[in-house]
Image (tube, rainbow, N blue to C red; front, side):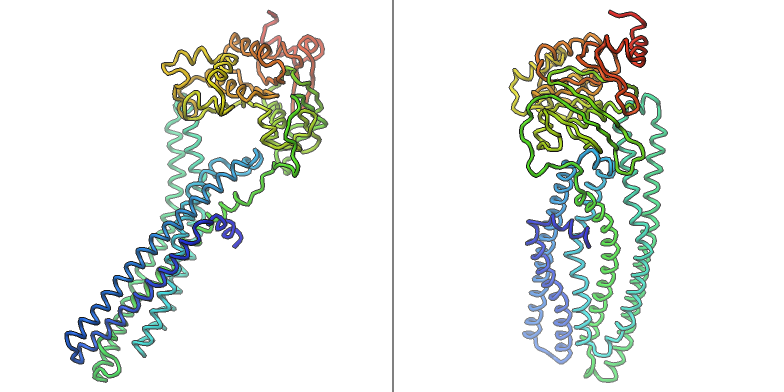
Length: 580
């Protein structure tokens, strides 16, 4: 019950609607089982020759009970909808809020598509299950108990029919539910794959079209969808057996009551059992059987939703691998950076270290270039500075303080990172830029854009800085997107600016102008530039060469040309021996 308790902690302000639902459900059930009792007495009194006044009086009681039951049902439905929708809202908020606190290591643990499924499909399942739990799972057992009790009071020996029907139906329904459950549970893992297929396809739409792979992607999606359909079809085919089993038990119950009841009415001349009792027994029989049917469906739905609850609890119970210390440092003194005997693995179980034997000192205000082949862990190195990951061994210091001792928000405010995959959000250019500083003035925005060489192309848009950016920045080019992301990072006025291959889509002239802007306008900011082009880093104060997760050489451009074969080879290949 641990996962259930975890999810139910999100109930909070919806406890009162839940209690009101239970109260009205009890009232509704009580009145529903009371109506057949009143009806039976009315029929018997009519047989005995009751007058119109008595018939009208009992009829009025029946109408009042029916109206009261209807009102209870309406209120129960209203409060249950409010409670379940409120729970879903709170769980959705709690899960999303928890994801925001995750480090990259936590995100790596859950796939993106799985997190999407959990915040959508799984929460919807929990909402439906909770509504069923506080309504039908209370109503059905109560109806079963009340109906059996009233049937025993009203029918005497006729109630023995339930001793046969209830065990048969209960056994059948349990077997059906057990058979259907494995198929229902397996569906959720397959939903993750389906969402993954959709997400990859939408994100990589240009690549898909560029390689004319629409048919392949359609087949891949169809296969995932078909797989889910097969599981649901199998489960629903088994659950469909509920209906014939229910019909069999209902008709058996009616035939037994009519045959045995009729015989008792005739032989006792109505003194032991009357027509009213037979009518009530048939109604109670239907109520009992329907209650069992509902209980079986509740069993299937709740068991199925437990998988959703477990998946949500996994997210809610997961502890962020990166958290604030007890007494965090709230000020970053400067942009100096020290790597001291740093080793790093992406997970405890990883066989290979992504970084090892990293020792490096960077003075505040320096411009540092980082070169290396694909997979040399250049991006991993800089992600440790803003504490997107924590080192496995050793320490990373910023401003002379271990990054693990800082308040996370303080540290990340001091370190601006323009990642390899640039992301813009739907909204105006100004809205996107103000992610760097929500209080930035128009003048500050324009200055940052001029440094990032973005101002000129923004001015060519009809609406300038108020131009709307589509989701993902699909209506701007790759180079424009990179320059906007650099401007956004500059608006934070950081002590450390990290460009992770963030000028790869701009031409060399623009690249040079951006670096010139950095020197002139932010000389005190430490600048780390990861690049593939030697030209992007050759005028840096320090150039680092990485290979296989290790720093294999470091120095200035002139020093490395003399001491590093790797750097010299890259330089020769890119400049063809010519230096301008």
